Amino acid sequence: MPKGKPWTKAEVEKLRNLVEEKQSWKVIAAELHRSEGAIRQKCRRIGLEVVADKKPQKPRTTTSTLLPSGIVTHEEVLQVLAGAMKKAAAPGLDKFEIMRLKVLVDAAKTYDSVLEKFERWIEIEARLLAMDEKIAELEKAKGYAS
Image (cartoon, rainbow, N blue to C red; front, side, top):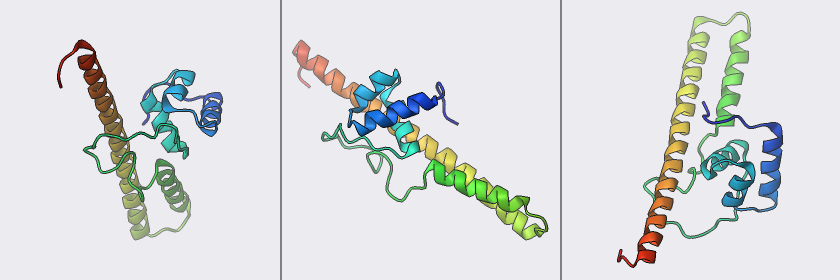
């Protein structure tokens, strides 16, 4: 489950407007009084893409900059769960169909949990990279060699 303060409809609308205006992560985060990581995660969850901060990145330990293509989103997992629930509510299911639906629900919940952990890892990694850059700037300002 998401952590932090819940998003209001007004905040989501403001987020959409700022993304349409092609504002950077930093500007959007400042406007909404949230971390850049929280903004990135919300954008991924609602299908928005911010393209303002395109600069070369250092190599990452993960295989992509955000999420690899072909990854099922949280929304798609919810659709699978909703479909399984509707099917499970139908009368007259045999025990094999019920077992199949249970496996599907368990797999969807596990997948969603792993996806959220992956997203958190990406956010932590981005923070570490930002700290490395800040340390390098401070060392440069103080005259240390890196």
